[in-house]
Image (cartoon, rainbow, N blue to C red; front, side):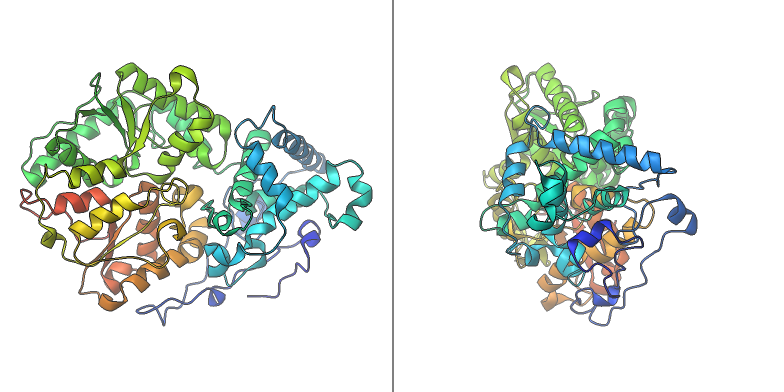
Length: 536
């Protein structure tokens, strides 16, 4: 890695050129068969992109921030940032997460316990700007200097010497999108400081006050979801067509003539999937239908706008967008008069509609919301379905989605299922609540613009890929097919791109898939293998 031009935190606002340049040769090394792996050069922005977009943090553009054309425009944006920062610290405006934010901002003692827990920081070769406390320290200094009484006079004595200019704002905005919000750092902190939350709140400030957010999360994400019914742009009519195709494929694959129960009133369960499953991994939709039907579950799905896509990207960047989408999910459940909402295999959908939505749902909007994982465990061990674990006699490891496992503590159900149905199941190290993020958390999995995919595939996915390789070292030859169980649609999107980037199927025989696919593959009365050995 080239010499860091930044000698101290205050230089973050003073350096005119790019702060740091990543060198892949400094990234953590990978185990066999990648011990001789040489990372390709990371893609640079084009000259046109460099002229138009802010990239002075690390040379990458995650959210495509346009460069202001005049000094007046820069000053206006800085003023909006400072006004938004005041709101962020106000109980009247920050109505969801103010208390944990203040506790994290006021109590960090800079012990660095969090640093060695951050997969991005470690994988990068310990690049200073990716240290978990770094973005929080920038924000803390701005608050101390520009918002606290006497701050501009005392800042040099209080260690808050930083300039609030456009470069500071733009770099801080991009820096908030170098954190996957996995919150492994918060778990390691001896006093519970949550640097992941700080990153998320910076994103919120940038979105709600400056209109700066990843296009894939906002314009092409939550805004599209509210306008069409899905973040993919799939409207209700198209949704019905897709369900029909899935039903036909299910019959061709298994011989089972199962119709998806749509818009059934008074059902016990309203099952909501990440709509990415319908388009990219329809076998997951099929598997849920097979399991629920064979177990005699009284369930339904919605074909109405607001009811068939569990995605809620507001979780990652904007409280207002999170609330709008969550209330749509609740509205559909109330119209169908279901007993409970169950989230399919999507980690961020779990967290968005359960612990975070708990902060906004009151009175008649309080509807039971549950994870599919414990329900699947109950079904598997109920005796209603017969299994032959030998049908899953290949190496299997489990990825723990951060938002369902670390954030919500759902650790055991998926493990009990895999230990029962997969004779060669083995854990990653570490695992459970100590897991590493897939590298695509907080929206990175779907952020495909500019040169950001190279940063994600080469850097933020790297620690998870190392874990996968370590778990399969005893059977690492490509002739032995291996399965990474990833019960989360967003994580699967990361694995799709990351495993392709490393050519993992050809070099190591590794594919990925969900939990329900393994359950169906082990069913005695499903004659043909349900799992297809290809990297999708």
